[in-house]
Image: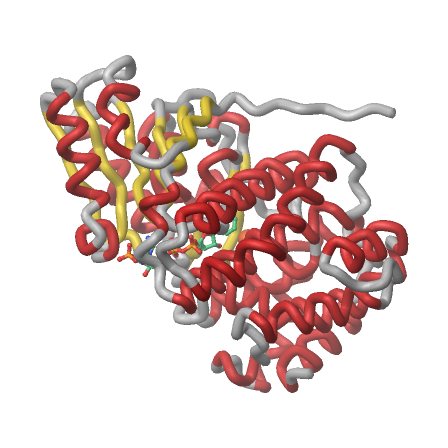
Length: 386
Ligand code: NAP
Ligand code: FE
């Protein structure tokens, strides 16, 4: 047995913990940039909680960058980085869904090194620039999905190029993750399902891909078990803090699992979808692709797909994983086709091309190594639905 594990993130998990941010942050300095979205953190008052905590603990200057949108762009990172430099900001707080956390983390890199956000994203041939410095980031997730609060990834879109790529570097970990499940209670049914499916797909893809890491796999197994149990409860009882807590916990576990074992073809095929259609959320795109890709993948790792089927309550047989995915999507109201989501059929060729151009690094770790023709056919299947 051999495996590697590295996670330089201090995790503070508990109800009410968002109020601790000022106390935690003061060790990093007194000039703060809060990176957040346009509306939800104002509406659910988590922004107010964070600002109060910062001022209570002596912050001297608190700036807010509140223009992050879902499928965030390199432009947002560049804009916020400029503020950090101009105002000599000591540390950054990312508050919101994965989009806000991803931007906050990337701002730390871009504001501390030369160049722009797009210089640091991972093309298959590598990024254009390598960072050597960062600034402290505290991440406070208000969704339970991406796991960005505990990993080294920032997923960014470039609207001109219509590309969505990952900035992945050991300097891109936040210093602290403050996970407070009370901040997720305001998610509506659809957002709860969208983000929960993202976490489930992180667990499924990290469990089944060809990389081997026993510790990451055990985290993925636990996440699958918990999401199966608690996502339906969180949907029925949005204020149920036990269900919300276990969803935040599962998203964190799955976020660590992908940090070690990466994702696979479902994510690789989703990124071009939300790059070309920024109104489609990441979780919806994953849901649209999950059944077709699982059907393609299960023969490549029979043991792990049997285990997944079993954890989801089915006979431990690899092909039952397909049914498990299909039924669970149905149960949480996410059984969608790419056509339903607004993808145009004539775009499938371009999407296929983009998977090859941008995400072929994932091909060799996918349970079954795909050809470009396989990918085209999978998009067609996912377009038609099941
Ligand atoms: P998100 O894009 O951050 O947010 C989606 C929507 O949810 C926004 O409209 C936001 O509103 C709203 N929202 C957030 N928290 C809320 C709450 N508690 N109550 C009500 N509304 C709330 O969603 P996400 O799924 O968490 O993040 C998706 C992004 O993360 C994608 O770009 C995806 O590619 C990326 N991702 C990253 C990783 C990683 O490892 N780093 C992994 C998977 C996915 P406001 O805009 O008004 O705040
Ligand atoms: Fe994801």
